[in-house]
Image 1 (cartoon, one colour):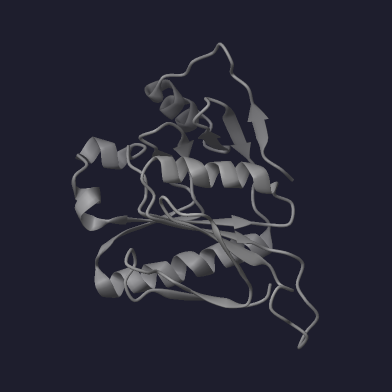
Image 2 (cartoon, one colour):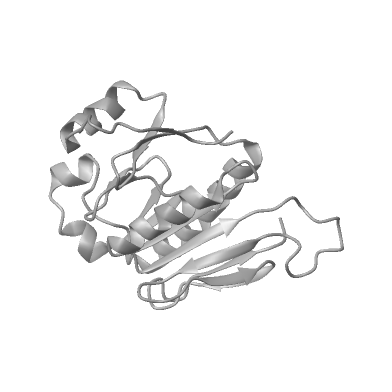
Length: 201
């Protein structure tokens, strides 16, 4: 099931109105694009949910050891400085930047772009909106982003590089780098010492 995009066109929601809309519709996962479109996100299935949980767990364990920042789940909406209210599948914000926000900003939709995000594309997701979403993060100050693009699993014991999906790596002022799976991803200078092994899916 793909996301539903509502074109609000002449209806301009303020940040507070969008926040209240999300609060009174807690059963719906809502986002807002930089263009002002309202996005109704579908629930994820078992396979995608399990993989998302694995990624958050790995990121959280690394962060618990380093104590360099804060890790956030896909339930968190970030109010991006250059427009858009977005929920990455996993996100990390450096401790210094997080603590620069006041308590109200932390409790509501934090007006900050994560330093690092993971977006997970399942087989039913359209790729184009996810790429636009990654660009919104970059426009707002993202330092590193991984768009993990899954394809149907390869046959057991026959996984070859390129059979099991790919990762698009987003960095500021650089072309998108595409890596075929299986691969080990490096957190670079954003998440020092963090690695994530991605097998063929």
